[in-house]
Length: 158
Image (cartoon, rainbow, N blue to C red; front, top):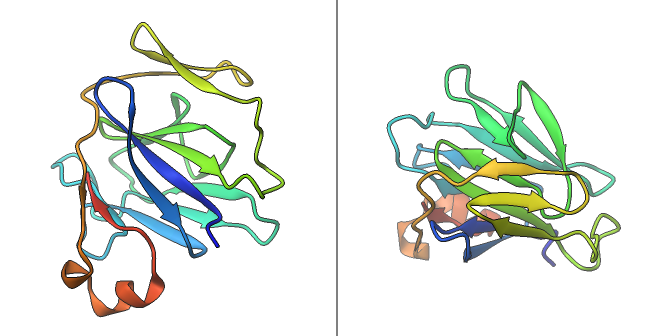
């Protein structure tokens, strides 16, 4: 059962690939061992990590000392709780977190929309500028390391 999913946000603000989180952790960065790879020079090997807490809430942890990770336009210094439809940025790539509809943290009335190139969240006055958007490519199981195949986390190159 999926805890929720990362949605890659395209350049034009529409939803791109949906990457379901099936385990309790998802590593994002440039390294081949990352679950979501962002292959840009200003992204750290291990940029950030999404962890599921014992209570089911999502925590975003910045792992880079030089390249910032942003949550709803605010720099994540160490870790931050992630709400339904929160947007986080790795370099110029945008992702939106969506809890599964069965999660106690799912908020059906909380929506994020694109207004004049800026993401607006109805519940937290969230704003995050669109820079260059996102292009995605799903990674086939044959391209995954054996350890990652076992973990069954959606992987993508962005």
